[in-house]
Each structure stands twice: as structure tokens, then as C-alpha cells.
Amino acid sequence: MLSAGDTVLVGVSGGADSMLLLDFFVKNKDKLNIQIKAAHIEHGIRGKSSLEDATFVKAYCEHNNIEFHMLSIHAVSEAAAAGQGVEEYSRNRRYAFFESIACDKIATAHNLSDNIETVLFRLVRGTGLKGACGIPPVRGKIIRPLIEISSDDIRKYCLKHSIAFRTDETNLSNDYSRNKIRNEILPLFLKLSDDYENKFAEFISDCTDDYSFIDKCADEGYHLACTDNQLQLDKLKTLEPAVLKRVLSKYFFEQGIHLDRNHLMSVLNLVNKTGKVQIKGEWFAVADSKNLRLARLSERENCFNYITKILNIDEFNEKSVDFYCDYDKINGSVTVRGRNCGDRISPANRGCTKSLKKLFNELSVPVEKRASVGVICDDLGIIGIADYCVDERVKTDKNTKRVITIKILAEDN
Image (cartoon, rainbow, N blue to C red; front, side):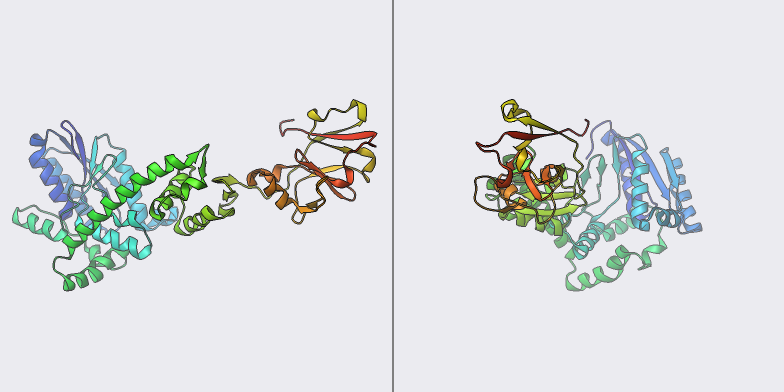
């Protein structure tokens, strides 16, 4: 957690946990070769008691020559204005404040009891193995030296060694979810086993080890399966389910999208069948016969700019155009549009009629590109698909004298 010469910022509320942590660093800073700073947030919730907490922490720091930083907020009103819960808002402001202060490490006083509450809260709200790992002892520059010590042991130590601390009376209120777990649920566990906290600690440790191993396998699976920003389905099918789900989550996370469990399970189904699943707005997970990928599919009708020419057959060069057909077989005027639901075509020389969806599947046209493919029509219906095929009704043959050509212009033209 520490390196010689580190400047450590200690988050101090004034409670037993943070005062023990600060006291430990003060007494051992020379041995550890570190510098100490302290930060306190006054949340504006508990009136006079909250202000007294701030005064208490400040006085301790002045007495021990510790650089002191303080932030005052009005958590309830500010959280409401931000559209967040008070706990969430306070946490975000707290860490933002800590990060604004120059230091090498940020030490917080989360303990084993906090960790157990966190795991239970996540399990009830919905989580996987990662959530069962609890609060990490180290995350970036944040360190949590007390994470394996129970709150009961911390208070006993403070009393034994005369470490003064403040008591937050709101901890007794069950208005907050964590307090309800702490005050109502954990005492029931104690009735089942007086060693439940150590058993939880072992469970959290095992979950962390297992998650670390599976995550390592997932990194290997991701690099095995991901090519050209797509996941190869044949490679995905070789992976164990626990690894496969993490590979899928990692792929979408790399694209800037977090998959919740429902979306993850829907994407998981695409590994064994072709199709698409909407993730968010125009973003879809798409699987064809070979790959699974993230694609942006627009349902908006495309507008096409294009140039038509009518040429004698001896003037015609098919390499310079996107579509051509026998001009004298056309009925009325020619237009280019995007595809519509139910569109069908009779591909030349095939002796059949197909929906555009089946034709695109057959021609392996990527799903995300289909909306931008030009559908060529005359007054009787579809006569062709730009770049792909012409309808039997208007195909050129040995009797063709004139050809109509279409060149679709790029958007910037």
C-alpha cells in the first residue's frame, strides 16, 4: 500500500475508524518514512453535531502538526438538485475532494464490517462474483489499511489506547440502506455465529482469488477471439461460460458500453445463432455466421444523391457505375431509396423471388450497412440493388440497345 517517501492523505470523519487510522499514521510516520495530510468533509446534515465533528478533527490535526483540509457541502439539497441519492452524492463529492489534494496515496478507513455490508447490499440488489469481492484494499492511489479489521475490534482498540473519537448519531437511524443492514440484519448473523465476520472475510478473499483467475482467463480469451474489432464466434464457442461472459462484457466495455445482466444474457444467446440485440438506442450487438460485433443501426430513411445516364450499348462501361439495366424495359421514372419492410426482388437469372433480408443474408451484407444500400425502383417496383443485383424484369440481354446507369454519390458530394 505504501512506499517510502509517500505523502498520504487520510480521510477523517472523526469516527472511531478514521481516528484509529489517523492515529496509526501519526505514530508510525517516521518508521514508514511518509508525510501525512488529513481531509474532512462536513456534510451539512447533522447541524451542530456535524460542525463539532469538524472542529474536533481540526483540533487533533493542529495538535499533531498535520496539514488539514476541509470541505463543507449541503448534501441533502445538493443531492436532490443533482438527481442523486444522498449517499451516492456524498461519496462522489468526497472522492472528488480527496483527488483535488496533492498526495501520493489516499487512505480511507473502510473496515471489515463495512465490507460485509457492501457485499450484502450488492447481493440483494443484484451482483456477480466481482461484486462479491467487496471493497478492494487498493484501487489506484486509494488504500484501505483497516479493511480486514472489524468495527467492534476497532472500537475496543480505541478505548484501550485512549484514542478519542466522535459518534455519528445518524448511524442509529434506519433511513439509509446500509444502516438497516448494520442495525437489523447483521445482529441476526451474530445469533447464528459469533465468528460470522471472519467467515465472511474468508468468503470475500476466496471470491477475490477466483475472480482474479477467471479475469485472467478472460483476458486471454478476449485476445484469442477479438480480431478487427469483432469477436470470432468459433473462438467464443470454445470458452467456458464464466470466461465467455467476461469476454463479452470486456468487448463491449472496450467500445464504451457497460452491459447489465439482461443485455449480457441476450448477447450470450447470439453466440449460437445469427441475429441482433438492441443494447442502447441505435447500438446493437450483431451476429452473423462468423463474427459478433457492436454495430450502429439507423432506422432513419436514407437520402441518396445520384447521377443517371442513358447510354447506347456500345458506349457502356459497367466498371464505373453502381447499377445498370436495360433502359427500354423500365416503366416510368427511376428513383433510389432505402429499403422498406417487405421489399422483394427477383434476382436476374435465378428463377426465384427473395426478400431483401434473405438476399442480404445470402450476400453477407453487414447488418449495419444495409440501411445505406440503395434500392433502385421504377414505377412498377424494385428493379435492382446498388452494387449487388438487378431484377430479372430489367436485365440486359443480347437485344439491349440502351442502358441506364446510376452512380450514387458520397455524402460529402
